[in-house]
Image 1 (cartoon, rainbow, N blue to C red):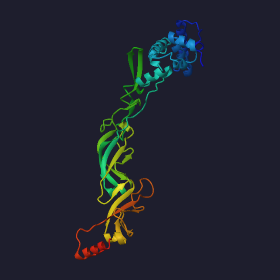
Image 2: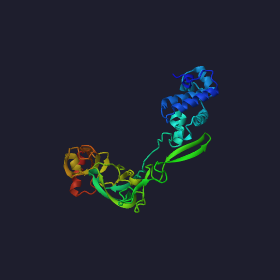
Image 3: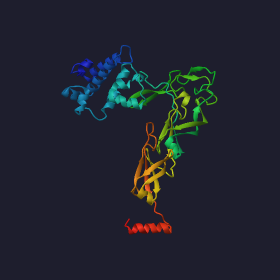
Length: 375
């Protein structure tokens, strides 16, 4: 583990001024934005200075030893003392000749992460976002399909009013034949520098140039058709392929079918939410279908055969003798095709015994005879 006194090259009895002076010299020598700099060494120097420049932290370090993180874990460093370290760091860097514009937030630990997020990640290394084009917006729509269309799949043609790629400039935002020149606002750097006076001193931050989107180049003339945006509002007709086996409230994602991005930015996606109209004969549970059929009393007692409607066509169902009302029969593979898979579900046929409401004299005599025989 590092000895902070050795890192700064001072004795354990060094005065605060000696520690500060040693830090300035070493910071100037090892700053990573300077020729011959060393990022790891600079970070180590900064860590040592944060501890030894503070009387309370220095006393805690002298008592426990170890690294800055270990001492802090023992409760020695807490609260908002890091802000004072940052101010001292800023002052030392100015005195070292680095200037406020060369602050590197990555080199001052956790506090640097906070400032990096707050000020947009600017550092002397200019690690700003360059050439990032605004992506298009996603679109969500809802469509209704028939029960059989959901089972077997279909295609639907829809109309979408959206921002599409400009046909005149092919999405570039540049008037055809126009020259590409350096951006006048950022002078070709792709960034806009802003200076702020804060409690910690003067801090300069960088943001992507809004005129050229960080590219540093712009068109001498913008496309007159889309006004340089690279997209235009128009109605497009799109064919949506709906696969077999989709479920109610299923969602189909069509990548790149959303709105076009600005100046050639990535297009958004299209999300199609499905609603399935119910069927009068079939009910669905997952990939299985359910239907009901009525049989006569004689069929239930004696058994027989009957034609049963499936989602494909009619098939013959064998009714065994002694069938009860409400009994179910399975037709294997007559259900819904498995979405993006193989095979199909089953069809479950529930039979109900039909009780006649009106009987002829002959039929009534037959049932009376059965009643006499306790059947």
